[in-house]
Length: 433
Ligand code: PLP
Image (cartoon, rainbow, N blue to C red):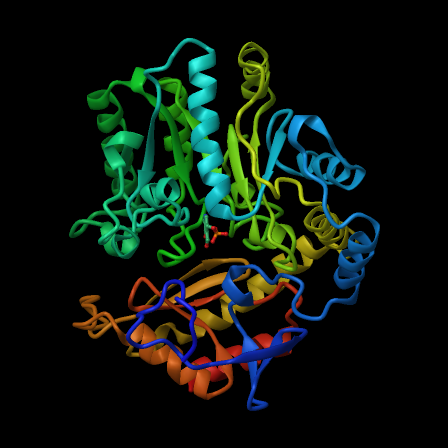
């Protein structure tokens, strides 16, 4: 094949698809086959492929200043402009932003910021983080420990205990409800479990609770109504920070500017962004914290002499320029409103497949969805080896569409936000086949 160790791949069976170029919502392989990219790559290529404005933003910045670091507060205008625009968009109080390169390293940064913050305010014992089963937060040692998926844990000997990672229920009614349990009862039970966990561990030891407002890789789980309201009340009661990992759900994906707004979440204390931040034209991520948390970091950094955290590419000027242009395009073209309308269209079209004998559940909001396939529609019994997702993904690929098997039995849909309604029809047509 090649000398590459492929990421998230069965190394015995890597695919041999060689993607050569992209245009709009389509990509082409080295044999000239055309594919509708129904996953926007890995939930990221919001503005599709070969966007001239983004390419110009990138090459203009490369000609002007291809690299400069941000250590010691040395800065550049495009970084300042991006930070200003981004912090004005997020639903947070006086947000400040730290730039990184990927969602994983941004979540690592947050873990360190939390420790730094609670040390600074004299609560060093408050370091534990509650994450949910079946969540996805990345794959570095620390972010993989936040992640709640066995495939990302097996054989890696992750330091859950040392990092203080605690686990609570996934808010997935279809798979998690007890027999005859209503949605309201389900929400009551899992939020009671959360409160019990906090009390057992001691609230004074728990720093934060991390969620994807709507999950991605673990199956596009949309929590039932009332869930976040209850969660936020509990966190407030025990003085625990709320951390939204919006790496997938930000920037119009869920039918609003941010997934937190779609899900009625009030002003998170921390937020992680990446992917659609630059429409994936350049790698860049953002770890955002509220102004209150930031204020507490200043004095300790003065005592030590430095806030000792930063990547060579934190605030890379080319990545900043591309991200800034991406945000400008989103706003100029009203893309979040537009995505909301097309998202409703996509969801209603997908719902028509509900009657299919293989479909167990169709989940989603806006322009993100998953179709879970089952062996027995009535009982919800899964296929025995959980591999139906890969089978269906391969079938879609043969028919000219790239999708993604997630959580074993589901197919994910997360097309570029620029997709048209007739291209959504094309997506559904292939899926139906
Ligand atoms: N957080 C969420 C919610 C994600 O979906 C992902 C990636 O899919 C990550 C974090 C990790 O991002 P990256 O792959 O850029 O490290």
